[in-house]
Image 1 (cartoon, rainbow, N blue to C red):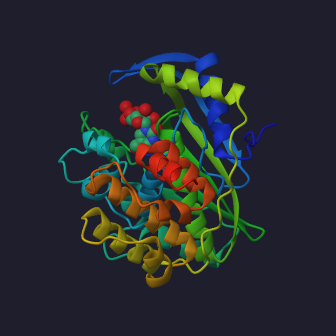
Image 2 (image 1 turned 90 degrees about the vertical axis):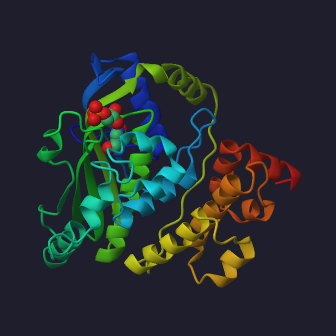
Length: 340
Ligand code: 5HM
C-alpha cells in the first residue's frame, strides 16, 4: 500500500508510532541535547479527524490546553501570556519572554500580512475559485528561522495542504520533526481543528487528515512513560468516546468571542456557573463546552486548586469529563463527591 496507513482515531496512530520508534528505531540521535530514537519519513491517515483525543490513563491528555492551543492558533496569536498560562513549559521556547517564534503557527497562518489577506484567507479564496487546485498550501516553516543558530523555536510544522475533493476538505500536514510522545498529540488536535474550521469556511464536509513526519522520534528521557503507555495499550481495552462536529456557523467572530471569555477567565475577572455558560453567553453548545473547560481551569488556577464545581463536570460531554477527572485530582474529588 503506497498511501499512508489508516487509523480510526489518534490514539491508535499514537500507539502504533510509539511502538515503531521504540521497538524498531532506525537511528539514535542527539540534537540540541535531546537523545532520542528516530524513524524517518513516516505518515498516517485519520479518515475521521474529529477523533482527535486519546483516552489513556498513562498519557493523560489535557483538553483545556488542547482547546486553548487550537484557539490560540485560530486567533492568529503569538503571545506567551495566553498560551503560557495553559502550558508554562512553553516559556522555554520564547526568545524574549513575550512572544513565541516558529511554533506560533496561527500567527503565520491567520495574521494579515503587509496589507494583504492572511495566508489562510488567501488559500480559502483560491479554493473557492478552483476547488480542484493543488496550490492550497499554507506554508509555516521558513528558511529565515535558521539564520540565528541559537533560535530556540524553529517551526516543526512545514505546512498544511488543503485539498477540497468531491465535497470534502482533506488536509495533508507536513512536519519536519515530531516528538511522538509530547508534540504529536497536541499537534494533531490543533491541526485537525484548523482543518475543520477551514472546511466550514469553504462550505465543505470534513475529509481525511494525513500526517507526515520527516523525523519522528521519542526522547530517551520519556522512555519510561512510553513503556507504560504501550503496556496499557496492550493490556486494557480503552474507553471510547466520539467528538462532536464543530458548529457550521463558526466564524472568526465566534473565535473572537471565545477569546474574550478565555481572557476574562484567565485573568480571573469573571466566574461562570454551568447554567450561566449554557443560558447567558449565546454560544453553541459545542463552544459552551470549551468555556466550561476554561472555567474549570480558572477554578484550579485561581481558587486554591483543590476544589472545583461538580455542576460544571456534570455539564461536560462524557469524553471531556473522563479526561478532566483523570488529569486533575480536584476534578476526580468533585466527581467522587457528586457520585458522577
Ligand atoms: O531541535 P528542534 O528544533 O528540532 O526541537 C524541537 C522539538 O520539539 C522536536 O523534538 C520536535 O519534534 C518537537 N516539536 C513537536 O513535536 C515542537 C513543536 C513546536 O514547533 C511542535 N511539535 N509543534
